[in-house]
Length: 482
Image (cartoon, rainbow, N blue to C red; front, side, top):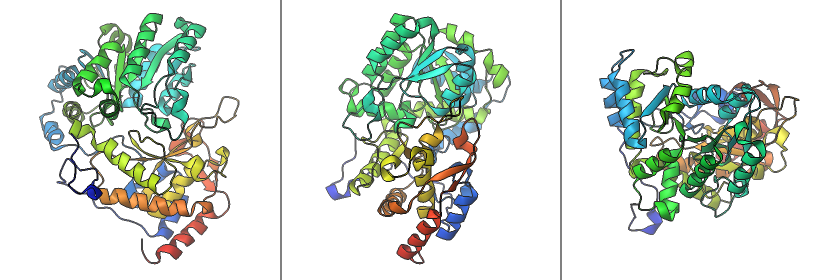
């Protein structure tokens, strides 16, 4: 149940926790922020954390853990084989998903690597509602390809559709028939489409996807990394789910999907990853890759303290007062910015608030990376670190041509239980200032462009001197204030 305030003007998201440990932050002067951004090659990944005031790069591995998670870490059993810690992880997975077969990995993209190694061969196609960067990179590395079949409504920046991550079911059925089931490696549902605004997928749509897969003889895979956000939206937006227990939804999904995997850096607010299945056949097909790439089958590259925190976090992911903290604070930030006229993705999804950089700076072409430019500008304006989710996050085709992103987004992730409401309002205020001064923002060009996952460690420079002009305007408007 939502907590209502007596005075409606006071209605804000309410933190369902109290703070018992703090970490000091510092906000550099604007001249220093300008210098740090340029030294980082206009890539927010290359900023030093000590130079960041509000870190909204990601919600992966940076969420605040609970007191019970920290307590659980003290009982870790570091036996190489037969570890009691791994048994506790298996019990937690069984409780939450109802599955018995568990493979551990050190993080989500490691789980993706195992899936790719097991099921991708040259010419195989993976069908998805939408790709994620590392998922696609593992598949194309092995000679496979990815096709996106999200409902066209998912690519509209602002609609009233509550489930913009849904598969286009007619296109899915058609593509399986056209390709031939034997050429489809698997169908992957991302429960919370990262690259188009963290948009959720309905329970009805997910189950329809698995029905098609079973009918056609194709493996179905659920990326459950953002499932807790997705379940929140199911319960608040989908009539069928309103009175279902969270655990009942988890179990129903695991009953229907052949394979479920997740990054515990997101689901369970810890670190590590899990691949699980009802059918031991699938884990047998993948298990040899765990000791090859990760570690023994009882730890998969995770340390045992992390595994204990993962297990406890899974139990907590069944609590609506736990899982509502992300979506409700994200929604608040998105509504605040929308009220200022700032173009954001609506309805707000999970993971973070997404600025529509294509509308923020419509005169900056795709090949000058508007989302990355807005990200650099926002750091200069407020010491706020977001993540580019646009053309910079794509990778060039083998012939060197560049596919332009369907949406140019700057993601402002909201790590769970980390920021106070005053910090969220500070972010909204600085974004509003940047919006009012958006004409000063210019494009970027590469100085160092890696071939794969270039958004992680590539470097760019400003085209012209727009960043210096932006910093001068900030000093004019704010004076001596940081």
